[in-house]
Image (cartoon, rainbow over all chains, first blue to last red; front, side, top):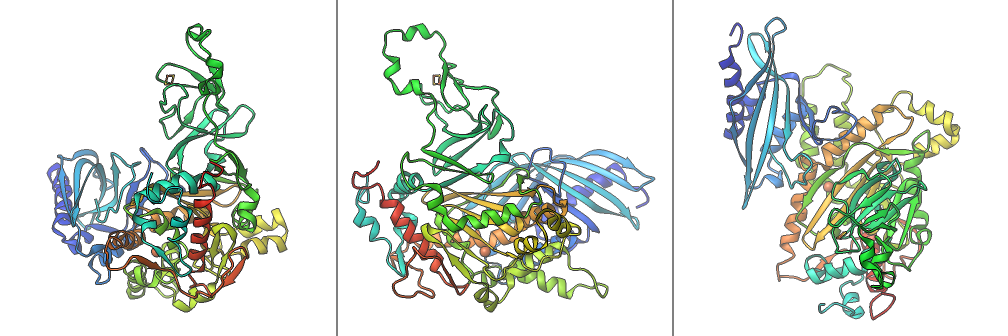
Length: 160
Length: 444
Ligand code: FES
Ligand SMILES: [Fe+2]
């Protein structure tokens, strides 16, 4: 990939969601920059990730930890395992900066999580900030804003 | 109302010295009686006064299942009013928080009330001329709760008009709030952002009990904290790499039984108590640059050391909050029904202290108490399994016997081995006391 085309960016977002739905976590982890961050704000339009609480604000180590935990033998909340499902709208391309190798997409999507007899539906917007690293797109920041970020949830077990 | 209503003996029979009956967790009639008696006779946490900093600021919440409004009146005092119009019952405030100006106005027929609840005006008032409105309850406006106390920013209320006074109810237990507030060089806390809200399909008391349950972390949290430790150890990293804040927060959940035994549990009368008398999972956090110096400047070195030397883990204020002094956090366990509880986890900023402290607090809250957190999942899975398991007719009693000593006297403060279940027994002792206090056609 020299410069990613619109289609490359759009495909990236679709592929990422598909990896989560298929449980291909090792491939999914390879999409991240080592200094990447995953952010799920608690407040609508939240700007500060540090000094107020978020639902999630985690670096690559913590993201890997979640994947490890998910696989673990003594992860009781994952017996049986959760499954998830993304239905995504065609991503909007928000920013393309070839010089800096920086690309931003905005993707509305619906997310379904299921375990035992429960099924949860969430509506959200994802913002992917991507960078070209050695010719491949990598995630620098994935920000997921839930439509009902201020609602009281039960366990949300997987990555959105 | 039910087989338990106004039956002191039936309620008392649910609690034995070393075990409690499952109806305490799963019976909807017992739950209704808790709302009517326990949550009316005790001092229940409402909110922090920094949530309503200016005149007219209000905040809506519940005491038990009663909707209330906490509001700052023109005299700068905090009032707690039932969130109910005296006309036809409409909830006056719906937003979780806001500023109402000088008065509340009911959205149905526009009766209006001062921010202390007093009736201010009724449209077309002359329609009530000669109807005897002056003799009705409605003319009193929005009813205040029985009593309110703002203790160093923490606002508590007692729904019942008469009952135990604030200081007697809490006694020495207030030392945990003192320590949390004293950690600010200015002696003041401010709420930082909205609380995490987490819905639990289990009884509220399971959550309160778990706050002093020190025999579960190394088992239930092996999946999160244990995996974190493994992953960190296996990671390729340069010699002398500093342990990241997240690891400092999560790793101590895997501490040994011995660690928890030695940390100690203190109990106070009326169901209050705390873990972490000698040390705790918060003891070994890295120093935040500049903070100690600020504390010395504010308090002098000796007092500063004493304040920061306290490492209380979880303090329970009976019936339904827990605070963590060393990280300025408060968790409120809001009962919804016998099998449903809303958990709100608040964090506070220490006024005049470095921002890095609240950064750590926010991280703790995310990692441990969010509906999206790993550690929180470990716990909730256990509560929900317990809530389901208790419906089994295999056995009707729940065991809380660990380190029981015959003739325990909960009117005395005590310090014991950190894995005792004495604090749970202390809570059930207080539970019985405040459940039955106004039964048999008593005070209420
Ligand atoms: S119900 Fe409030 S004014 Fe009528
Ligand atoms: Fe726990």
